[in-house]
Length: 500
Image (cartoon, rainbow, N blue to C red):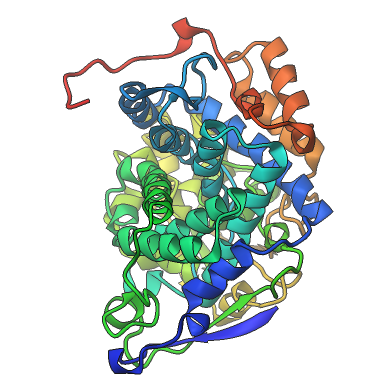
């Protein structure tokens, strides 16, 4: 890996391309690196993972709306929409829009946490849509996805966005552009311009994840993917982007992030070296913010130690800065303790999540968020007895550069009415790559079958699983096989009058 210094330069210095981060990203996207075997297998796992959560969310409101918009853009020889007959094709950017929304809606796919947050699986829907429309092969798609993960993971390690209240999709636009460029084997110059355009157009604030969280949380990464596709298209036609987008005098860094005195360090692999960053990412066993995964496991363990939850006086959770300030009481969001809050808000409330997991000793992607569940009196009492605290030891573990040491857990202290205290901690979720029972291919397949049961037929389920595990051998024009069809009668519609 090469550690690149990224800082702001005055316009009069005319920073050469070879020193610009966007160019360096474009260089690794356009190289001829051999595909790492483990990275290839992990891509297949993540395509299965994405499909499972996308199919499970097909009839949720945000996904229905995005699908209606996509259905209004049919295209001969286009791309396929999850759930819709594969013979029907649509413009790839609109397919990326709806399939990306379906993947993100349940907050149930993969994650990578470092200086910033990310869901690298958000790269897959736009790349797959473009690959289908342009009739690329399985190997082409694999190359693109591996590159996209490499770019996003390393941007997330090096540049913090949330510190400046910028949404993490600002790292997704460049990674999608780089991945598409790699998949299509575009010249470095074209990828470079596309990356700059994609970053410039995907800057937005973190209000989408603050206060009363709306369905835009699901739409946001899909929107970034759609914009990145359009950026690549423009760049392929010879159009340039704002340059240098990272280092310029009025660039993203200068005006929105750390400013003229910024000094970021972004690692990237050497040209023509295998890309393995996808192996540092991890998926979710439970449909909740990743930083809640270990706490759900912890709640399940603690339930076995408490005979009567009514005897609980208070619960204190000592955890990392990110967990405390984003999904804990440190966020100072009253919505996070409101029984009438949206699902999108509740899955970003560790107080709610821990209370439900402690009561139920389990977690379900739908039942755990139902209105009847969030309004249960015993849950509300328990929920409002929980406070979180930042512990610098946990923050240090969160940011450990060694993936084997990085932790996203917490220490929980439960105080009973009689003064007795029950204490337990867990460093990482059981399903984490370095957890008690890491997710393997068999777990991804189980998750897929569990989430799609009673939605798709057993025959369609087995067909998809067979095709996706054969991805390396899929030839040009065969990527439609990665779509999943369901009975048309099971697909809900929203026929409200709109523009499209």
